[in-house]
Length: 350
Length: 288
Image (cartoon, rainbow over all chains, first blue to last red; front, side):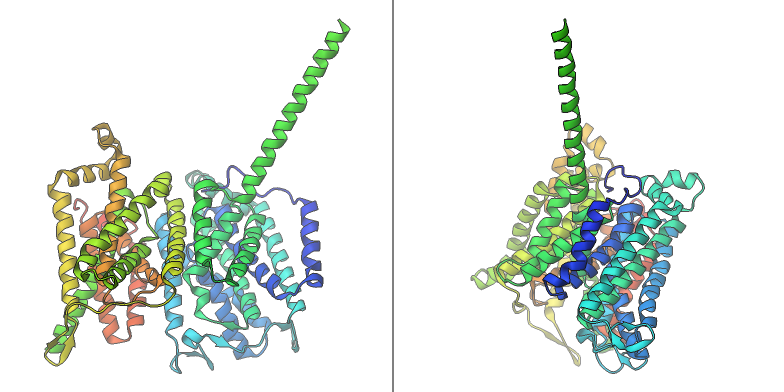
């Protein structure tokens, strides 16, 4: 399932880009930063899946595995080191390394889509079940107890590199997340504009053809899987900093399902789509969480079914298509009226 | 000696559990190449039907063996008509839509019955095996699993319906050219698969308390059982149930049930990597 024949990512719409940046920058002046921070972290998570799924055609049914690995890695490392710079990097590198191993296993094994779905799902489940079962003193890494269902609380939050006394909390942390999202977005654009990205999109469109041209599809797919997992790990690390506790819930099936829903609703084959999808649906989830009348999963499930059935390419591409149709229609209307005018003019002259 | 018997029975029970909970998914996947991620919720609803019908005064055997399959089969029929039939041939989309369905059903059941555990007592007493107390109901599950597999095999092998079904499985085009509408075959296959899931849920309800989210307990296990089994419905399900059931219980006895389950899931990944077509894609190619 691809978002139509879009090869590569379009140019930046500078107007929208600047509006978006200004809104995000000025938001703390209007509301609290707690909710927006969480929404932007989710957006980063969705972006990581959107990069891999929308442009290389690889759908992971268990992307929460790397999100959760990032969160746990950060928590454990930060408690061990007592400082955040190294743990932050580790929270990107470790999920990426895990993904490289799993990805290489899947892609070099030429495993088909469905079986890949099973494997990615099962990896997440293994982590979920294992982390839930790690209550008690027997399970620890270094001096950090894994804590089972209760998770790991009270680890050091992000601080200025080299100075553990200056921590990013509240509004500064919000800006850290903003910058992380922006950098990742630009990184995605750069990847997709590069030669590497072009081959990836080629693989999405027709893997056999790309292979016949002499590129190794498994190598490219493993690489993008690794990059995407690293980004998900960063999102997980930021999430851990936001929640100030990590629980096995980060590995849950619900987490994997949600990120897929955000991405597909926002739009496959775009970078802004997953970001918008995560922010809108994430906010909806928070709103639904405040009442008990309608269950959150009921709404999310219904949205996913409807989007798959009616709008398989997602909101933003559908919107773009609608605008293109409208533009074409208005152009042809203008042409028609100008033709009429010309004819009328000739009619007058004769 | 007693201990060996207990271990053996537990292994047998696990195999039966896997075969029973996977049968519905296997029928749908084997015949239609559709992965139904809402399968776990079908099982869960079968359990809810049994428990609430029993509370309403209906005999529990009737509730689990007749009502649960009927109700869940009807739900399956509606789902096929409304959602699945639009997505044939789009495997990933089907997985996504049925995942949405699974969330939707969890939400609905939470809305109707609340997010609290419900349970019902097993209608068969436990018995004494040497020094150990054994659940007599587990033997019933083993018997039901054998029965379901046997009946499925007899239907597929020796009846006209089974012949048409197997024909459509091998080539929907040829079946269609011979006058059998594949749409109709798929519709009834999906309904039958859902009914089997409902039966499994009903029969297992007395053993495990039920929550709206219980479906996720079944989905991963049945998913790996079916996929690892491959396209052949009965031999595939039996082969992978035996492998996974045995590994799960042996590791569980050696350590903890959680490690046993993790061992089973890890083994599934290895097996899928080695045999991407499933066990029956490699070994019993011409079986049903």
